Length: 241
Image (tube, rainbow, N blue to C red; front, top):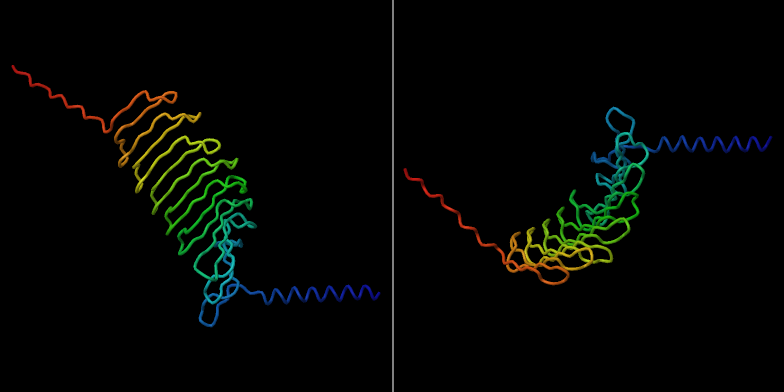
């Protein structure tokens, strides 16, 4: 009998605690200045499904915010983790199955620094990009599902600037390009799958320029100087009666 009374007492204490917690756990509150403060949760209009949830501290987001897709009730499609030391926000995008798609930092709603993108499944890295003020800036790498480096590019203020290299296995170069301000400028080399050079030459403002060499089995079989001479237009003679 005493055992039964003991368990009933524990049950009452537990129920009181849950009820008390439910009463004290409040959402969507504001401080004395009318700024959002504490835990906030918004729902999709006309539904009981969460659209986002997170915590404010006197009007400022703190900690992790979770964002949901309508129809997906349990797993957020994106999270934003706010940094208390600066304005940088770590943003992570997910599939409906809780698998990471991409992750990187944003400042003032613009991508900044390194962003990573993943192959289907979320474990293997597909691409690394670097941003400055929401524009590609710095090195960009693309990887195959087996982890092999497939392509490497360099950007400056959103435009290709520097080398672009396409690889085969074991970092064997297949294509080599040089860019400046978004246009081909400088040395270009093309190889076959066996690593033999096929052609090489220079570009100037997206146009072939200077001596280009073309190879067969490692030997030069043709050289062409660019730009090619313009073919003079033939003037039709007027017929006389």
